[in-house]
Amino acid sequence: MLSWKNVSPSGRIGDAFFTTKSTKVTKGMRIEFDELSKRAIGCAIEVHKSLGPGLLESAYEQCLAHELAINGLAFKLQWPLAEEYKGIRIDCAYRVDVLVEDQLILELKSVDQLPRFIRHSCSHI
Image (cartoon, rainbow, N blue to C red; front, side):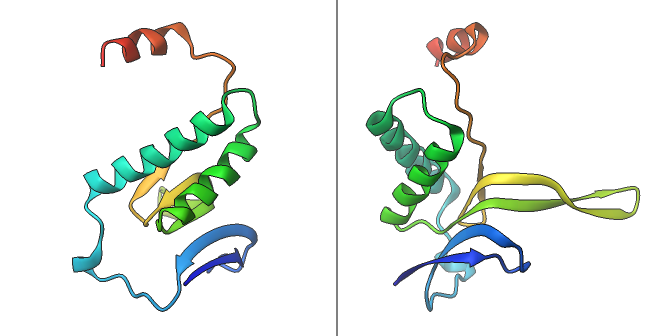
């Protein structure tokens, strides 16, 4: 069974994350990273094909969350990532847009047009 939660384990309200109920992930159950990244990229491509360009990043994030859930991938949205600096812990140094299966970080960007240097490098892939 799938479930959405609006309060993160840290107790912060508004941090959305997705889990599968009654499933304890063990080392042997972890999805291989290559397979995980292929599935996540497939979800992102599906969202882009369906919506096209021009929406706000937050809209793509929610649609990607739905697509990840449809595909049975556990994820967390806007997950705080702590950083350590000279012996002190900075709890909200960074917020991960989407953390998939506690292994893969997705940073979402919404632009009208890709910058020229990115278009150029993508054409060589």
